[in-house]
Length: 92
Image 1 (cartoon, rainbow, N blue to C red):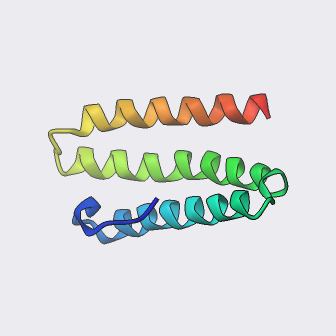
Image 2: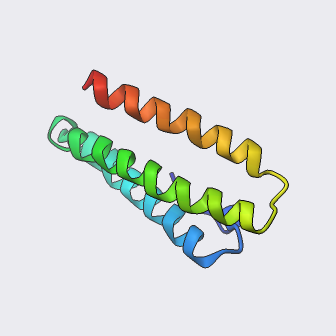
C-alpha cells in the first residue's frame, strides 16, 4: 500500500494516522516477503486492533463535528473493518 496525496482528507492529524497505517502495512508486507510473517503477524493484528479503535473513533467524531456528508457511510465502513480485525484476532 502506497500513500498518495489524493488520499488526503485535508485534516493533518487524520492524514498522518492514515500514513501510519500505510507504513505499518508496508512493513508487514516486507516481513512476509522476507519470510518473517509468522513472527510479525501477531503484532500486525494487534496494531490493527488498536488502530481501528482509536483512529476510527477520532475520525468519526471529526466527521460528525464538521457535518461531513459521508460520515454515516464512513462509520459503517469502519465498523466492517473493525469487525474483520476482531474476527481475525479471534481466529489467530
